[in-house]
Length: 457
Image (cartoon, rainbow, N blue to C red; front, side):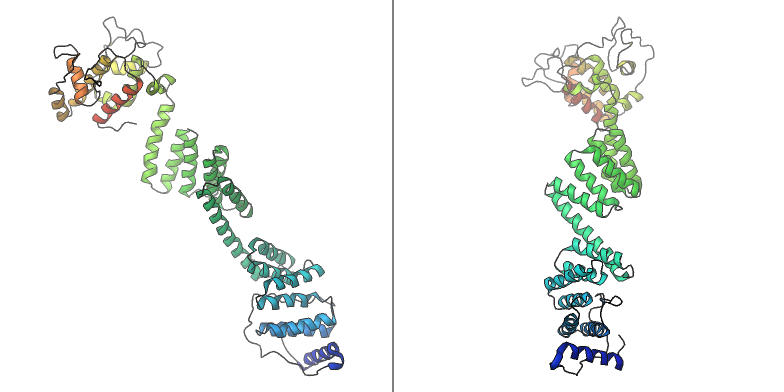
């Protein structure tokens, strides 16, 4: 601030008036102005007609001493101003800044509170209170004080940038706390922290995604999906948003929607692991769309011929496409059957028998001999393009106490066991007439899929 003889005279008069009979007319001025020691401090501007000119001058001199790096001299001047005018709250704020400079943050806070008690919207005191609270580690309260200061005086542009920095750092700190809580399994704490952080920063899409991940782990899938979709709407170029949506749909057994979300994620950022997921989900989606009779195969204690035909038709579809087709097959008892399309396909490919009376008997229980015959037919079809498999089939000579080499089904049983499609029982018998379980059927067809060159789903 500009010094002049008139201003110095005013200060001298003020000092003498405050000191009474012990007045010392010598006025000590701060060193010549240089770079301020505390440029972030907000000068406690004096409202018009708050105090006499002498008090104003003491107050300004106190601020000059503070910016010269001498908080003690600053305090003497601010205190002198308050002695002459006890309600002069700008100097109370000045004492707060002097205490801040001495790193006495608690005393600083008390001075700012006294200034604000006199004038609640006094921006310099609000800014100083924010400084004190920040150094005391009370980040949120400091941020509120800074925001109140800017609201009271929009010209405090330097505070605006500090507010943005504090918000960003606060956001980072809160996210770190939320992530640690989630990693430790404290999902309620993590959810509450994310909700609080979103309230403070509602335009950050990654917060909605991370909240969705926590909610999915909690089993709150509806809320998780809502928040993940909001994240994707706010940032449609971030692949992780769509991966999160896919994971939620997958948890809901919405396999087609999950595959679609993952596909979108891959289009934004290639990911081999997610690519594999898409293929798996397509298989699950196809399975989920199947009739209950098909979906219950693996857990059934026995299965029907209709179920075996459907299992082969679905999982060995590529092999069946390569099989010679017989369009002369006539079946009279499958009209209206849920498995009718697959029955006709496997029958035309010669993998399952149609009886001489043109019936398929779709409700009949499948025995081990039936599975062996079907497996043998499928293996013979594969061997046409796989000489090594053909050699295995030619050399298949099983030893079954209950199925001698001359038996009609001996070769089929030998082929099934030699290729690992079926296994003998613990005592080495084959047990042609024993019904097969759904699990056995799924395992056998899975092995056939493997032998045909396709990985089973």
